[in-house]
Image (cartoon, rainbow, N blue to C red; front, side, top):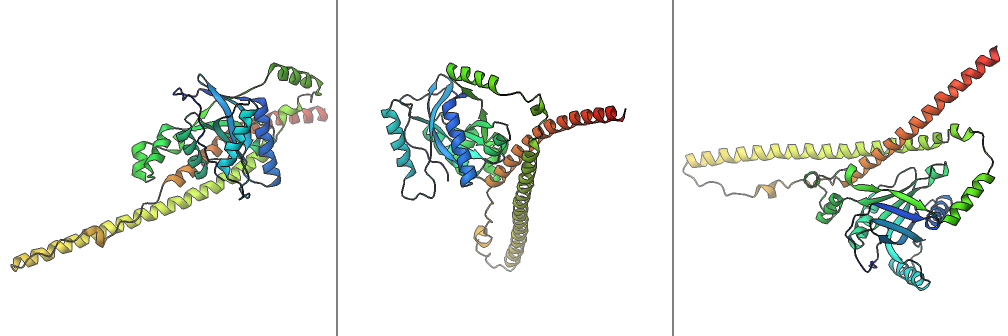
Length: 338
């Protein structure tokens, strides 16, 4: 289900660039709760609206609410969002729409529906962001909350509506500059910080065992599997594009042979003082092959890049822990042999 933006806007538009996103702890906990509930019960993508306001160059997220499930056909999504914001306004809660959030599994969030949804959000609500929460990575002890915005090149690409290789080269759009990541900060009230400090003192220490936890192993395995799947998909897209290039090259050769034959026939008719053959539209005889869109391969390449960065990060952590545990094991064996 792709999220849809509403027509609600802030009373005063801002032209300043969003330097970072600041989310209240309550809003973050509501996002986490919704995403984990969807991942454990329905295995669906969790999506919801972000509410807050813009202060100078800071986007503050103070509240959120989930979108209705896709299976519920009796409820209109846009009407639901407007009704929720009206009710929040009545109880004096920030009700300005500043973006949306979505859950992700093993970092796999880049997709065509997400690009289209964020484009509609940023064209109607200029300061909006999309917050991605990785459920599986967070369940292993690595909190993953990231905020993204479309780059001006990506917005211009969608305005043009052409995803041919020539159009993408003209706009200089690639998977590396589709999105720009905005720093994400979590802010709690002083009372909440005091309570968390007291709770941390009550939790028993684990004597440093958590520092050698190899919980990244399962995450790393899933990311490697997903990376192989994306590489296979990119290979299929490359095969399709190579086939298109072969068809175009073959058609160009046929056009060249046809033009040469036509010229020879006209030369022979001219030698006999006969009129030349009428001109024909060569594009009607040889219809150009449709250019395969390059947006989907670009999205797959972006997914591969995301997986590669995450795998590189996890590998460095896991290898360091393995070397440490190997040294400890060798020291233990040498001590026991004595």
